[in-house]
Amino acid sequence: MRLVFSLLVLLMSGWVSLPVFAQEFDVTDIVAASDAFLADPSEANRGTLIAALDDYTGEATVQSVNAYVRLLMHDAVGDNGEDLIESATRATAHLEPVSDILPKQYLEARFLAAVAQFNHDPDPETMLEMAHVEGRSRAFTDEIGEQPVWAETLKWKADAWGMAMGAYFESTRDRGPSEQEIQTILASYGADVATLNALADRSLDDAGLAFCSGKLIQRPAMKYPAGQLNRGRIGAVIMHFDLDPAGKVINPTVRASVPEGVFDEKSTRVVGKWRFKPDNKNAVGVSCRLERTNVVVPLIFTIR
Image 1: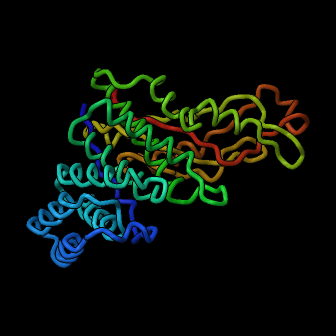
Image 2 (image 1 turned 60 degrees about the horizontal axis):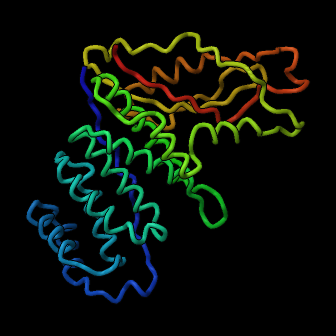
Image 3 (image 1 turned 90 degrees about the horizontal axis):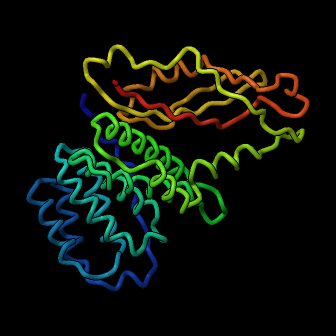
């Protein structure tokens, strides 16, 4: 059995702006190296940019952050995993002091560092790192109290990677982090499963009806795709769907998957046939409802 994870497309995009106080440092060498790297992303120019960033000892500036973004965008789609480990780890450290100002760039760099480290050397610490990325992304809201698209996207990607990492450790019989360790990290951000489920279950519709208790009937059963058996891939899919008034699954979509696209079609097709069965069918429409939106089901694919 083997793990085959392709690196996800880099999430980072766009340049950033920072407060004026952070513009007083000398970033001449960084700007020159970054421009040269943009014009010609050769290994030599990459090395020059890394050296310029290493020599810089000031606070994060527009120029230094954008140089790291440019470097990460290049390394994330390259074939050299060690390059990405280097750039993502350095970017995370550089951005950490301004993570409250630039949470998107910081968390995406931290995410890429965890993915690259795990692909290079599957270590339990990378799974704990991914739990921190997931928890902080789930907890992040903007100035009006809403979760931006980038944070929602990142939380699902981190969740899928965390599940796939856990499946890998289970399949190789290596000791990975326990579920309690993961949930403790998520709970520190208010993003543990118990808290999220409790919030969802308390939701009322316009008629004041809560969700019915019951269970999701998973028929047909989810099976490992026959076409992937010879590849021995391990993976995870985060499925999102709604339930109609009869409890049938509607609008099944994939929120995130690892490896990306490998198990998506199978997951969407099978989950679309599932339905929710209430514990007390006579209570439906009287004291509870079956209709529900934003249901999330995690799926893990492994060969035992």
